[in-house]
Length: 174
Image (cartoon, rainbow, N blue to C red; front, side, top):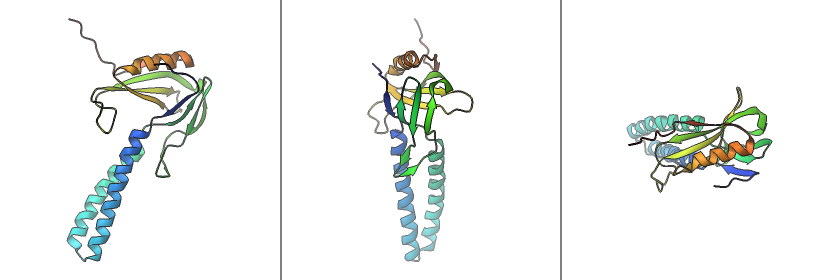
């Protein structure tokens, strides 16, 4: 993997897919509530209101805790654009941040598939630019099949930052 600067990244696509599905389910349930109220089927409408309340609660959690960033990484700074779904801005970092406000590159090893469509079945990695105290962490890349370790090293060399690993798999020697 060869990384060159400026490096354009968009690591929010997974969450945009999840949130689009959540918003669609909310819309379907709200439409069902309206339809059942127009049909004077109060009991079914109450059931749909309960279901919608639960789905809305999960949607709020998804919006609040989504990760991913859109932006451009330069040697001396990173420019972050607001991550948005269907024109709705999501919480998260935005703006321009100097490189010296970040302390490391972190490679986080994760179990499970990287793709929401399930095409990749193995573990994957998240490569983060770690913010100092009071600064947000920025998700630079999602990789799979062990490519995160090499990407983390390349980002570390390019940005002159140390590389740390989280949840690294243990190698068992026989």
